[in-house]
Image (cartoon, rainbow, N blue to C red; front, side, top):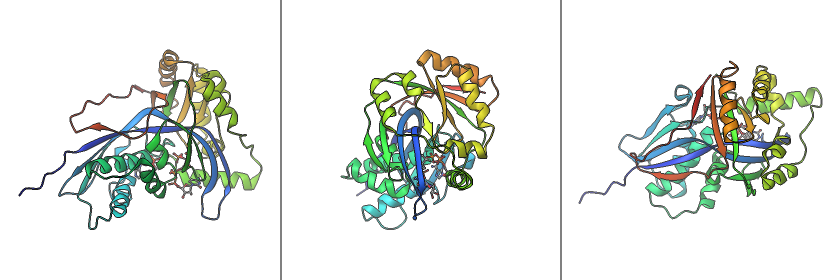
Amino acid sequence: MLAVVPPPVTVRVPAKVNLHLSVDDLREDGYHELVTVFQALSLTDEVTVAVTDEPGIEVYGEGEGSVPTGHENLAWRAVEALSAHVGRTGEPKVRVVLRKGIPVAGGMAGGSADAAATLVGLASLWNLDVTRDELAEIAAGLGSDVPFALYGGTALGTGRGEHLVPVLSRHTFHWVLAFDSEGLSTPKVFGELDRLRAAGNPPRIGSHTPVVEALASGDPRQLALLLGNDLQAAAVSLRPELRRTLRAGVNAGALAGTVSGSGPTCAFLCEGAQSAVEVAAELSGAGVCRTVRVAHGPVPGARVVGGDDAPRPASPRVHA
Ligand SMILES: C[C@@](CO)(OP(=O)(O)O)[C@H](O)COP(=O)(O)OP(=O)(O)OC[C@H]1O[C@@H](n2ccc(N)nc2=O)[C@H](O)[C@@H]1O
Ligand SMILES: Nc1ncnc2c1ncn2[C@@H]1O[C@H](COP(=O)(O)OP(=O)(O)O)[C@@H](O)[C@H]1O
């Protein structure tokens, strides 16, 4: 009798921006304790998983040339972790196709998003009886940002970012994202922050509570005053041109700008959807970044969207 091969499964998964990221000192395990408020944005990757006799990874789209296609790819590590969790032995007979819209090494957790999408896709492909909370435990072993990509929305992250509590967010917020021509390494940016702190006493951002209150109020002007990121000084120290990008976004009419996570992507909060389009157009003419995108948030986490032939909305794109 012929075995029935299940159809491929495609999952859409969001990028994140950190609305607040306060970083404490280095822990003994090499991580920094942090408090962050994540928001999932409509800028997405799509991940298709399929049963195959030729296991491996294919990558298309944003930064395709700089994404590893071997065992170092976070999506492949997700395949291996879920296989081990359910006791599957031998090389997993899975093909993973990544269609990337999230900038690589951009501080928007693209690799983490792909890992989360792979977990959700495989759970469906293999018809597994696993809850999202069970997947989140596997996700935390893959990287600090992976659990958030499973849940999406807006959430408070603590520990190294993997302990999550949902945050009430009443409003859709509109963002403009400025992609840089080259990524920044997350460990290098944390290392630079340690160096800056050892050399002096750079200011630290305050408590996350006002940010949580602004999200509940839904007022982008209130939220704009509170965006903060302890890694921003380190990212700017490694990539001084980011200062110009941040200024250009505000000059173009954004309410405020921040480096997303470890950067170098800059995220600009705008008054509304129309304002975001105008800011994006002006920023793309300013010559301070490679590409500009508009996005909104919060959006849900990794979700199955259908088979290979499912329609795919393209995210708006403005070239600098
Ligand atoms: C900075 C943040 C903010 O959301 O995002 P990105 O800018 O990378 O998107 C995250 O904390 C990044 O999370 P993620 O990219 O998953 O990092 P991991 O793979 O867990 O860790 C990579 C390395 O970053 C450093 N690291 C990461 C998280 C943390 N809380 N403290 C750290 O010091 C460590 O050197 C670690 O070895
Ligand atoms: N699926 C993936 N997509 C992107 N990068 C990946 C992936 N898997 C592994 N990587 C590696 O992880 C590094 C960080 O990528 P990414 O997750 O996009 O950025 P960030 O940590 O800044 O949010 C990349 O430089 C790349 O070498």
